[in-house]
Length: 227
Length: 227
DNA sequence: ATATATTAATAGTAATACTATTATTTTTGC
DNA sequence: GCAAAAATAATAGTATTACTATTAATATAT
Image 1 (spheres, chains in turn brown, red, cyan, yellow):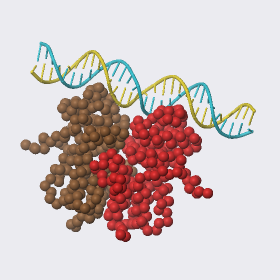
Image 2 (cartoon, helix red, strand yellow; image 1 turned 90 degrees about the vertical axis):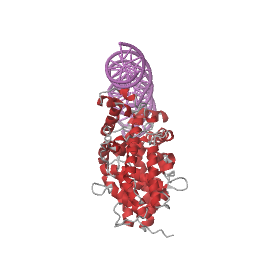
Image 3 (cartoon, protein in one colour; image 1 turned 180 degrees about the vertical axis):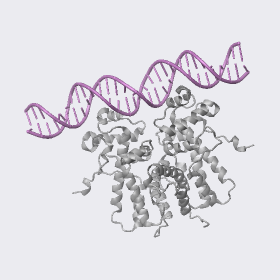
């Protein structure tokens, strides 16, 4: 029996009216919602178009999600939960803080590959959404309220975990949280630049964002690289 | 005579239909447009509301700007042109590459203060827009076209200038462009976190974003700090 | 087999993001 | 000082968006 079969990403129930994982329609909404946002962008994405896409009705989608903003927050949370899970799996049992931190940074900065365990989620499309659209989920006038409602707690927990790994390597480093949050956000930004404004990044197919960020962290924390 | 009196920020003429600097109404549109976006956020901002605000008509504003997206790109360009000007002024004549770079990074990362030379622009409000809304100007499906049209050339030039300063300090550093673009974007991000998600940043009123980024660059480039 | 829950269909609303036309006011050139 | 031109304001109209409300049809569970 494959233990991983039973992995489930659970999401703050404030973000939906009816759990999309609880029905076929719900899963279809999430699956094709991701594909549609990736295709047309968040601004042009509407529940009406999504309804057409899945041969369902706009009003049926509204029974799962209040509005498209909450849908974006929902899939963003899914993504970071999934990343968090991957990370704890990849670094589990590692005793050397240095290698553990580097492993974590590589996990965060590397391009995403599909995860067959979640059939209705296209992680590659979702990752593109995270790069192009996810900042729109918090760059709003409502951010303080939504923060209180726990909308960003998964993301914050991930930043905190990596900050902890940083402090395990270098306890006297003053800026572990800022460095950690900068790596998460900066990695998305460098991936965006590589695709759209390549003249202002050194990252490309050969020099990866991973290379850049690992080098950065090694230098800042003055880590030994045995080689 | 004050030489600075004659400073003018000139903006890519593709971004407007009629130069807003050329009339009182145009300046009023820019002035109150900035204040209104700062107040209600870019999503809720409309030309109709702006018309009401300045006792003018929606259709009159449309004679200056095609749409609100181009207005955002316009004021973003204004901001980066202004920053670029400030920076070249502040670092002018500095011969030591190290102090020059640090001066530049401080200029980029420090909170903005009002510039009396531009009466119709509230730079503090504009800076808040840059932090909260400016990424929406390039996180669109049209970014590649708009990039070809030169919409982001000022920003790219600024990234390039700072990357050059980095290479003057450390010519063998491989990632000058990525580091430079990360400082510009990351600084806005840390300012945002300080105001809205303070649990995932070390930046606050006493430890500034400037402190963090100067320390970061000094460590990455292994710069001598005489002290 | 019927009650209950779920989904689909239809209709409707206020607001958005514009365009087009006409009227009025302001500027300017002579 | 007056006519022509330019700029602005007012009005009206459109397709789309982001929903809400109601009713009808279908699936499911006991």
